Length: 121
Ligand SMILES: [Fe+2]
Image (cartoon, rainbow, N blue to C red; front, side, top):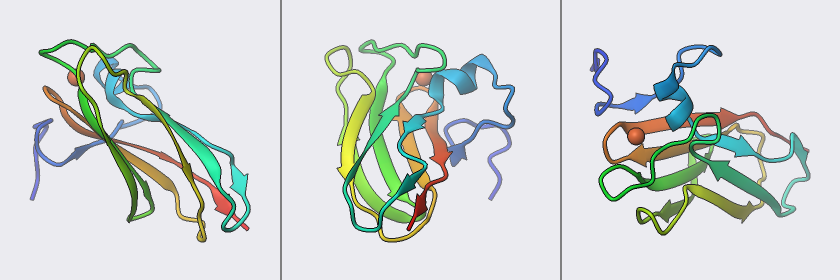
């Protein structure tokens, strides 16, 4: 299946390091250590709109944020407009060196992905 530029179809990803304003507003930024010890808890912070502010209004907001280790689901946070900023911190403990992946969903502009490499040893 191809979405042919339809933002509401599939998962949107920044196409290069030179992001468009739309990509900057929606690409989740992950802050976490580069290296962690197997099974030891650590914090992961995810921010949407860190690169360029995203609206947080009743008609346009980030509805949810999900965190994965590779394809393994870790957590999901539902957000309400205006009263909750799209910035979350969760504590996780990993056993494998899969990239951290975040999916976030904007009510107008679809689902977007951000990733961060992390080494578990
Ligand atoms: Fe949006």
